[in-house]
Amino acid sequence: MKCRVCREPAIIDVPRHNANFCAPHFLDMCRKQVLKAIDDFDMLTKDDRILVAVSGGKDSLAIWDMLIDLGYEADGLYIGLGIGSYSDVSGDYARAFAAERGLKLVEISLRDDYGYDIPTATRATRRVPCSACGMSKRHLFDKAALDGNYTALVTGHNLDDEAAVLYGNTLRWELPYLARQLPTLPARNGFPKKVKPLVRLSERETAAWCVVRGIDYLVDECPMAAGNRHLNYKDALNKIESQSPGTKTAFYLNFVDKVAPLLSAFALSDDLVLAPCNSCGAPTTGEVCAFCHLVKTASAHEPVPVELITGRGARRR
Amino acid sequence: MKVLLRNPRRELDIPGPRRVHALLNDLDLNRESHLVIRNGTLVPSDEELGADDVVEIRPVISGGSL
Ligand code: SF4
Ligand SMILES: [Zn+2]
Ligand SMILES: [Zn+2]
Image (tube, rainbow over all chains, first blue to last red; front, side, top):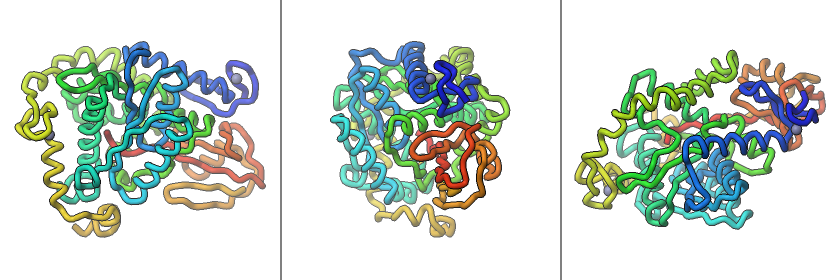
């Protein structure tokens, strides 16, 4: 296999582009895709104060690295979720990445700062782990961005993530969720601008970026992710993709281009009734926001180790 | 060749030589969701892996919703 650009030996084949690349030209392809996303969807300018949500996994470290590489200034935000050794190790990767490059990493610990962790919140709320986790992260990303006067919050969502969420929302015709599933959400009502510059790169490509750039990241999966719907959707889409390369790209990008604009009426509907949370001031539809409610419930519960949620103990309940 | 797999972490001995795409097929792994790495370098799908190679097959799928 030869590189499409220079005819030197290729290190990776990218079937959705029907092309193979050597290391330098693969990195070029990734940069171009990210710049195109930033440009097409009005994501960032060089004046933005950028905060990158960093998990220690491949996507968030790849986008932080790319933004710095492309000349943006960006700090990182790491949230300690308290998911046993997974969280300990992921924090080590995020800290090492920042330290090696002299970058600023803001840290929040759910247990130290809010008195709970994700396994405990999962047990206390009796819902799937990603529910309490996703809600905690969204709230704290917003808060950290506003507290630190950042103008843009960057997350590492890639093409596979977005295609999988789109697939799930489409299977159920979740119109309000579909309407909100955009690569750029402008700042509004006390929420910072949120952007996903990796939406034009697959997760195989973001992982390959890390390997080629020598970025150490946490390869192992979150132990609480096993068996969730999202993974099943990714699996289904990748089966289709391997038969017809380019399907995921078309599914997601054509949605954003052709369908999302038709749904915009559904997206704005909850805007009108938001008011500040009585307890923390974050915009909410109730008197107390869902996050403050979660903190109250979860911090009152005795700590639950992650093994009790992921292991046999979880099934018995 | 020695093949390192993850989730769960395990090591297999597989007779070589073998091309990358054939190895992934044998193990029933989708090329879309894996990278093959030899000596720290990515290996494209038509490359032949030798009997003495040590390779890592790294899954690239992250779970969870945000
Ligand atoms: S997989 Fe779920 S529980 Fe684990 S970090 Fe992601 S959102 Fe949180
Ligand atoms: Zn090249
Ligand atoms: Zn609140």
